[in-house]
Picture 1 (tube, helix red, strand yellow):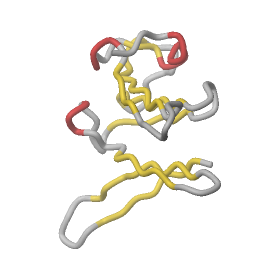
Picture 2 (tube, helix red, strand yellow):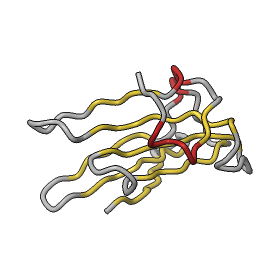
Picture 3 (cartoon, helix red, strand yellow):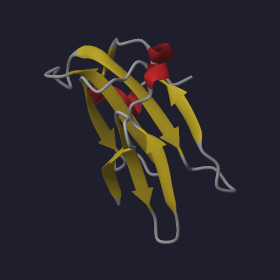
Picture 4 (cartoon, one colour):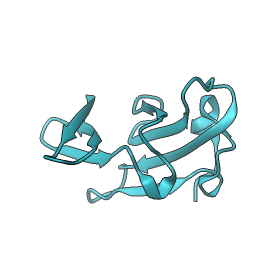
Length: 108
């Protein structure tokens, strides 16, 4: 089950985290990945259902349609054994992806 949590340290901007919980573990990812170009003025979509062991996180300007070629998408691959996590980016992190196509994109 995935949840989105917002934490705020004293005298600091809010930190938004995506928390993925399994039966016996919890993995936390920062959503406002500034190195990836995300900021608090972006919409964030999370999909951990489409592909088993994969989580897709998309960032775009608020109001962008999921069918628009204006998304940055990263894929978190947790399918490895032993428990490994690999994060890759579609189109080298460019804002040219269509979120609706996230499962069929090439990630590097």
